[in-house]
Length: 269
Image (cartoon, rainbow, N blue to C red; front, side):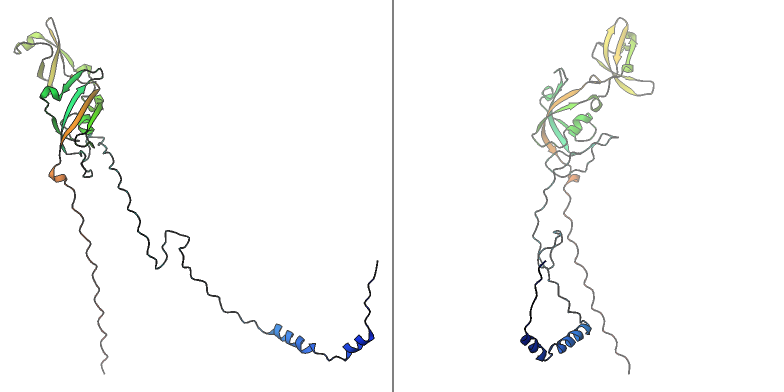
């Protein structure tokens, strides 16, 4: 291990001894500075934010928000028939489309699934069928099927028995003797005969077979239990006056200006 020694000359030692002590006051000042109480500094003012805060939904105070584009008008939803009555409620936006309660005239051609034509406007001198949309009067599938169509539009409706002439009931078939129809001239198959049942209801029976002395009659509609197809074209739409577009709401009244407060009474002398 090497030791490094520092040798101080005699002259330097004498010079240091002769020098006056000047560090005592500084040490005293340092002691007083440490004992003096600390004065709190003035609070630093926080800078004022002039930019938009993190929450973009809250506008900056004093700033004018930019106008936003108006939302697009939604397409009118297709009306839903009432489950109990099958009718479509009359409330519907006033547009150029067929709405419930409108009087509609349509040309049509009705066919079965095998292509058999059972009815058509051509069989009635091309006269259109006129009915009230969404209401009884024609079969439900036809009445509700035109809702939302526009003038001149063509469409094919596929209607099930539930929305047409109902299911076919075997119990609606009866057999009667030919002698019971003596008052019916020229009795033949396909003839419609009104008859009254035991409940007093008048039903329309169709002669389906004449065999010997027995006549078979069917109270089912000829199209009962069958799927129907209609090619239709809307040729006229009449809207009742009661379903006109609602009037624009009146402008809100200006708020009342509060009266100025009365001056206080002077105290009596």
